[in-house]
Length: 118
Image (tube, rainbow, N blue to C red; front, side, top):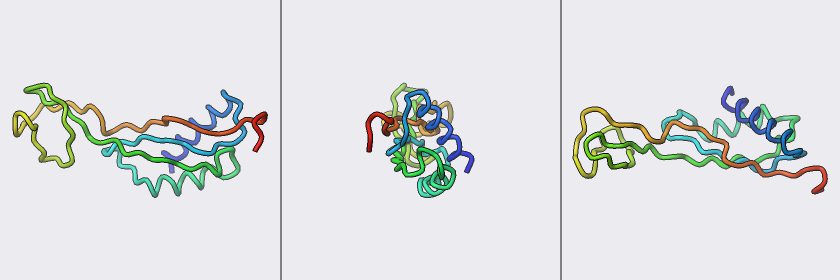
């Protein structure tokens, strides 16, 4: 619920800044390691958004893959499992740098202002 409330706070701040009266669509990027279940986030967002300009907004949730940098060769590669190996070096014991996979970002908000009508 706290994550949904944080998303709503961001959306409402942007609504005020851009004089938006209603929000139609919100595009989120969520890292695969962020421990967010899209269906649960969508449900919680619908609950916290009641009575706000975003109450009918559709959440588009895009999962961002886990990408790491190999400490040996410097290549970036996508990990689907903890045991995945660097495609160039093979198994890497330690030193992997996480490039993506934990983020949660509001990428875009679509809506209408008073002047745009319905």
